[in-house]
Length: 368
Image (tube, rainbow, N blue to C red):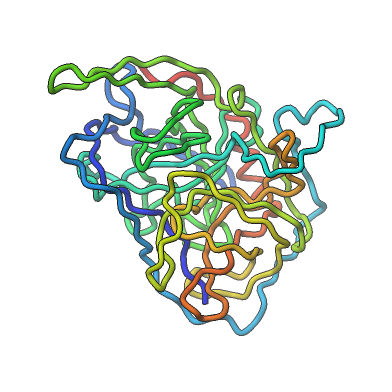
C-alpha cells in the first residue's frame, strides 16, 4: 500500500505576505517559475507568532490506494553521470568517521498555500530539503509536491528553506544557525506540473542569499533587524548530484518527519533531523500517483520528511554524498497501518535536465 508522504500542516501565526508570481519560462520539459517575493524593503518573509498562537499540528491528507500487481520499471535512459559536491571538486583523502554526522545541507522548508493569508495558521505547510551543488551556490533540492499545489495548479507562496533547522515547530521559533533562504525560482518537470505524475516528483529551487533575523519585543510590539549572510552553498556546502545509477544502492535518507502513522501513532516531532539507512530497490506500481518508476528503502518516516535527500556514497567525515533521490511517497507494504518504506522517483536524464536548468540560474540578495 502506498500513501503520500504529504507536507505537514503548521498551526501558528505569521503576519507578513508576498505578492504574485512574475515570469514563466520553459526549456523543453523544464518548467521554471519565479516565486512570490517578500513585500517591502528587505522585509523578511516571516514575522514571529503572536501570544495566542496555537501549538503546531501535522496531518497526512492522502488515503491508501490499492497496491500494484507488478514491479515498477526503472531503466536508465543513458549512461550514468554525476556532479561532485561542493568541496569535492578537489581530489583528496577524507578522514573516516565512525558515527553518522548529520549533514549541514539538510533543513526544513516552510510555505503557505497559494493566495492565502499567512496570518492564518491553517495555511502553513512544511517539508524537508537539501542544498546541492550549483554554479552560483544557491540551489535546493526537494520534492515537486513541496513546491507545487496540484489542487490549485500553482506554486506555493512564502517558500523558505532553513538548513540545519532544529528545536522548533515553526520557521520563527526554531534555530536557524545558517540563516533563512527564500525561494526565487522554482524548477520542476512538466510531467508533474501538468500530469501530476509522481515519477517526476522532484524540484530544484534557486534561493536568494540568506538572511538572519533578530527579533526583540518592545512593549506589545516586535521589532526586527535583518543581516545578510550570503550564499547558501558558501555557508553549508552542497551535496553532489547523480543519475542513471543502479536501483540497488546503499543510501542515507534525511528529513524532518512530524506526522502520524496511519494507526495514529506519532513518533516524530519535526523539531530535529532524522535519518534512515538501507539498500534501495524498485518499488511496485501505484496507480493513484501514476507511479511506475520509484526506488524505495526501508524507513518509517512520516509526513514532513517529504523532499529530504537520498544520499549515495555519503561520508560522515565530510557530511557529503551524491543526491540520488528525494523522499516522495510513504509505503505500508505489510498492511499493518505503519509506514515501513519511503520511495523516490528514479533519477534519470529527465531529472538531470531539470537540475541543469536550475544549477545555472543566478539569484543574489533578496529584493529591497
